[in-house]
Length: 256
Image (cartoon, rainbow, N blue to C red; front, top):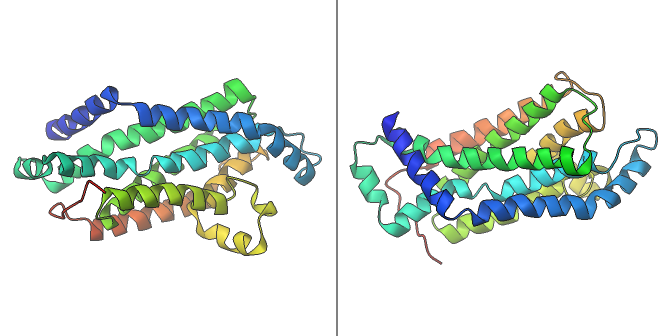
């Protein structure tokens, strides 16, 4: 545990020295909420004419799902940074086991994604009058499942990408594409038929379904059980792929 904490402390120190990416991807989604709340509210009025919900019920979870995806790449950036600095081999030569090394490297990404999601959802309550009509426990459970799934996805991308450019491209494009197909940019009901058919194959769709059960409806834990199980399934698949593909001895290219 001391070795794991040492790795995590060093990464946390680096984050404190340069927190720009975390600040940007926490402030930008709040602006996204402000820009889109009214439009989404009008769309919800057409889709749920008797529900009397505001746009925040959809746009706050949507912004959280999309922009938490942009932090997925941060899981791998720490490893690529070590390769670029020439310190990865030193870490491998230390008493650290591969499992300890990767556990240490996972702490800060978990904290940053959890922090971002917590801030965005809190901003929804404070700034946009988000009303959770259902169970708050279920609401938090979906948020936690989303955070864990994103970390697992980040490790999978790290395992398959050889260069930081590949990782950045996949993380950025994936956040927009998966988020869009999952109904985070616009309600799934308003997407083309082909997109609606693909949507259930994306984790963003199930995160949005889970949030919708408690923000647009008075749902409880039983109502979010399926979204939670599916998100857990995605997490398991991403984790297995990462474990099979990742090798600490692999060379990672940290430049373009």
